[in-house]
Amino acid sequence: EWREDASNQDSKYLRNRVRNELLPLLRELSRDGIESRIRDLDAQSRLLEKDLELRYENWSTGAETDSGLLISGIESEPEFLKREILVRFITAKTGIALSYQQLEKIIALINDSQSQWSFHLEGNWIILRKEGKLFCEKKMDC
Image (cartoon, helix red, strand yellow):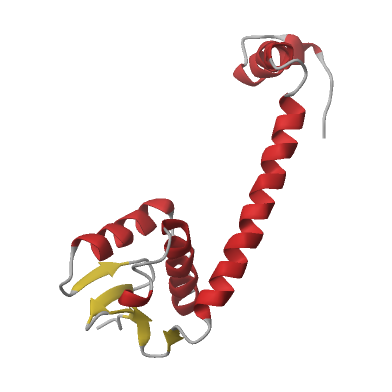
């Protein structure tokens, strides 16, 4: 809830400086086009999301099996689709929302190594590469 008081005009707070100084300057420099540009970027983002969803649906028809994700099936895909495939595969199997850093590390492992490897996630989950596939396995506590 927004409340107007004297502190909202005090530039000693960074949020106020942004609101009172930076945003008006950006509006002036962009000839009041900043809101329009944000709307344009939002529309572009929605179009990209729709395209990605369609590409993923086309790719996923018969590509994923219960026995794992075939790495050769994603290697030739565009990078943004490869990332979406990995995120959806791992999230569906583990229930874990990957961080950007985790996804980057997994992609680096896939790209840099043909050998077997494992990558540990929270909740005792492990992503394994073996026999040309990715697997998600939950390690049991001893």
